[in-house]
Length: 465
Ligand SMILES: Cc1ncc(COP(=O)(O)O)c(C=O)c1O
Image (tube, rainbow, N blue to C red; front, side):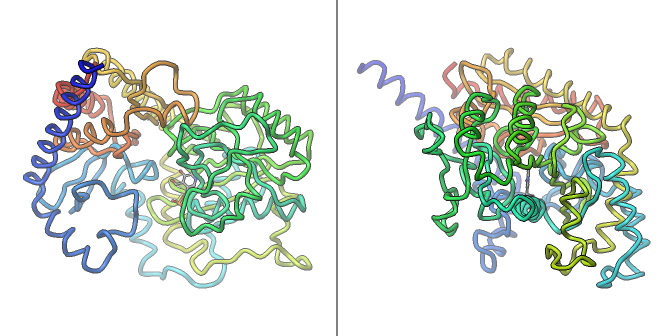
């Protein structure tokens, strides 16, 4: 026991030393970002308006970006493998998007009346996504999920929503449940004692009365839950790839089971394709050949500008028709604003099926390269993802098929490697989530993999194998 404790202490000391070294190197490389961060802290809590963008000691300040690269305030170049959390499908400043926005700006940005660009973007979405007859725009993925849930509640007259453990659908109260729960918290076998846990302070504690949670890719658990509580449930909401939860694909069998169970019980199935719409021309529902009742969109459909949309079966979406008596209300000062709409049209027109396939192949190449680097370095770990998505996890043992498997991985090691990658000029999420864009080619991916090898070599000495 004493020997083991000694080994443990030595490993912890080696890690602390490595972390201090990486932080010092980061500070040395980015002094201007440090100054700008301090100035920001005087007016913004923690220096920013987006909790996720922060990482110690401070985030980078970016001067400009083009294609798959950006340059920080100190002139350091980076390959951008985060693409604003998957939303910049073409990287930065795509010429067609820039031209569309530049042409729109002198004509005005928002008029509180209808514009044809909105119809164009709606046509593109409804043509691509077979399950979507009608669509409405809003300003974020959070709003898209919120409205889809509200539409389902209005349509079914029921209140309860089922979500996936570790599923992220934005910051709306009803979905801030079991997003990042303690992975060792007891998993209830009985559907009558759901494992729904509030995620954020400030969300009313009674929120969990209307939210049930079930694990990803566990058909039996979903069956149990919906058999016991299905009569109360308005909607099941699911990401076809668990994004924030670790880029973990939902399996076809699981999604098919959800589709069958929801149809049997008069429950609406909502696919949150906010992230996954980029993975196939018609979203992941096309890949799985499943028709949800409603779909939430955001990210790539705005061409880099704030956006959200939700759509689905005509019978459900017609609730919003304002010419009807007592329509379902959905408004928003900037819904369908001209800049977002023209940028979204330009971005999606520049993203045909051939480009989807090309960047998915680049993503496969990237995940293969990262996996090979992990094996070569003998640092334990796995790479999850699908198509243009990837995520490195430092888990031991079983395959990562759900939130708990990913969340029990070594988060600290992810953060160390993130810093080491920044020092190599590779920008990804601190949780090592990454994605390809159309601005990339095989050379950029190989450059990334080579940098990943070097970053792994740097952290490996401090990591017990
Ligand atoms: C699957 C999913 N749904 C919803 C959202 C929320 O989108 P937004 O940040 O635009 O509110 C996100 C954001 O990352 C997401 O990944």
